[in-house]
Image (cartoon, rainbow, N blue to C red):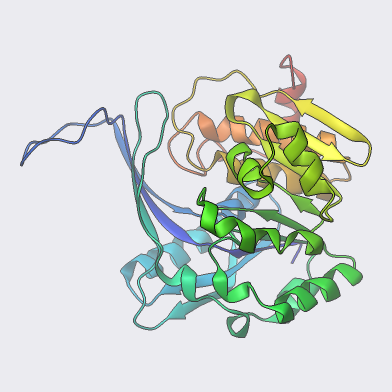
Length: 312
């Protein structure tokens, strides 16, 4: 398998536009409701599959109906789900997201089975046989905070596998655990708030430099509407966001990761891969859900469109 995404798997129930929660038994009529496969591993896997990249996913879901749905929808999208284990008696992680008219996404969340995923649930051959392993949400997959897992990552890297990592939460107490992974990854893709929390830096440039010093070959800090900051040994590069009408920001970080990984697999340098990630994230921001706007597309089509758009 070309890519393995490993970590958080969530079912998202999204509704838009939501301006307020109805009082009592009142009903508000909406334009759209969707249920999607999401989370820093599952969402990235679905986006990669939609871009035509062979991908398998590994993580944990419950033995409930939500788990049935998540495994089914990922398989339908083209993801190999052999690494997704079912946890007896556990609930599948799920979020309810009432999307505001401006694309903002408050959430109600149940962590569920993600918290119980551990090295014992993982087939090591999945990692060592991949070109890229994407660690999605290592801040909340506590069962992988294990020296034996770091050894497995090292064996995969020695065999030529590249390791990328994204986080899920913006909870300060979880950042130290995530930081422990940095010497074991090649590319780290946090958002601005996470980067500042982990490092205690006063600005994003300082944060990126500090994170780079911890071991990765590249750090890509996503900045929302400001694009992203790419840090490598060659220096810092700003990659601007695309100006698009925003419907929903859910999953834009996962889409950025998917585009970045697809760019690496296509032989692009880090900055060029970041530009592709930006273009994929812009597509997703234009629709509802973490995989919106990618049906019928490919890396080549997205790049052709990006070349015609100023700033990309």
